[in-house]
Amino acid sequence: MGTAPTLDQLLDDLRGRGARVTTARRLVLAELVRQGAAHPSAEALAARLRRSHPELHLSTVYRTLEVLEELGMVARASFGDGAATYHLAGDRHHHAVCESCGAVIVLPDSALRPVVQRLAREHGFAAAPYHLTIPGRCASCRA
Image 1 (cartoon, rainbow, N blue to C red):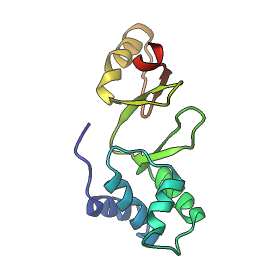
Image 2: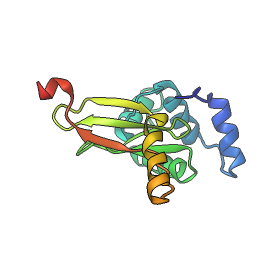
Image 3: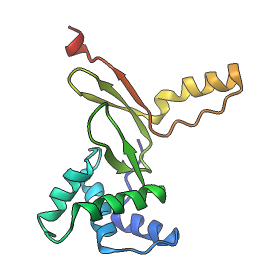
């Protein structure tokens, strides 16, 4: 996985896409940068942000995430029956998720390269996985 962008880079990117830098967008992006590889839910993001900004409503966080996702800056991931989670979109990766205990293994984008190449070679299919979740059972749950 590549180098994570800074908040300033993300705000410049936001402006470059013709979008305004609002307080909510700045706060959400800053928190996603702080979270790093974590994948917080909208609720977890809102709870964290409301510690220092109690006026920030959950609905505002949801709308902000929706806009940032539409702009291609944030990606949403769903792990089974749990709440959707979010992370910065520039960090292309995938997940293997245990259906029993919920453990998550982060897979680099390159892990799917052989599958993408095989689909192209054998079927002429141009696969473009951008955020794949692979369900299964971890070693602990299989034991």
